[in-house]
Amino acid sequence: VLTYLFSSSLFAKENLNRMSERQLNLYDRLINEPSNDWDIYYWATGAKPTPAVFENDVMAMLKEFAKNKNREQRLRQPDLEYLFESPR
Image (cartoon, rainbow, N blue to C red; front, side, top):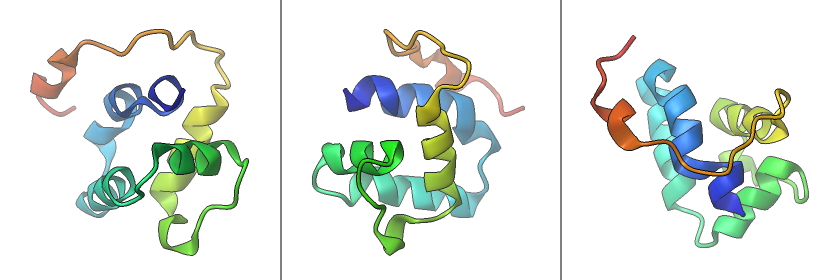
């Protein structure tokens, strides 16, 4: 479930190239520190309150991404070529 909601790939493709170094560090911490991906899912969807240590602008971006306001079909992760594209 988390793969499609938050998908490191989908979220990363949309956001990493415009994040500051501080935000990249916060993102890295978010995806690596919690021991359970379901926690991130619950925080991003508002099912559980986000711990203060992870309540920051990157979490706000993730929560906004999780809302999927454009009702995009997120059925597959993007190809990883975007990792090799030059920053915009």
